[in-house]
Image (cartoon, rainbow, N blue to C red):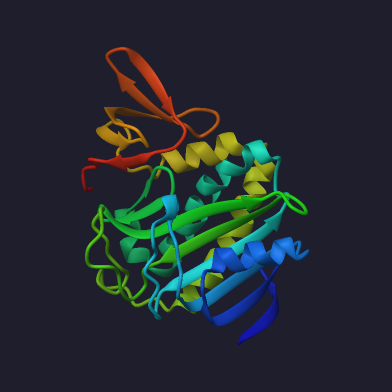
Length: 251
């Protein structure tokens, strides 16, 4: 069962009680000809997923939302949307739980941390048929979080902030519209990168990055013009396009 509303920060909105995955629903709609912009939310997901095929535990009380966009940029610039979405998410949580804003940090490439623990995640997926479309999936732990994860997790309620998913979603939709306008399909990425780095976890620190075939260590020196992580070491700087960051110090 779903209901549709209009006028949500320039996008339509389909709200479901239960879905397998908001991202999967968005991409299925895109393949059926939906052009967006369209937000899809669910009170719970039965088959939520994170990066690298991991499961995203999805009980009621948290926020599960996906924004479907048709050709928001050239395909080469689409990965930049993880930084756009991360900033919008930081903006929204800061607005709804202002007392926690000093504890919020962005973890490369797609997580929002609260006091060094994972509060939210972002999953960007795309499809090229029948047209290039992107699904920006966002999950935020509002009232609960999984007890056993590779990176310690938390939720807003555990940190003392009572924020309903509906309130957070409204703030997120408005913030996403502002950040997408700032990004301008990739033309404004320099400003997005600067804003992201101002909120980055571990910048200037020694970190570990897990790659598919190995693990590397070095100093987090920033992002390059494409959003790749710059890892400094004795032999110079390594540019990393995808990986999992570990070894961050809590604020």
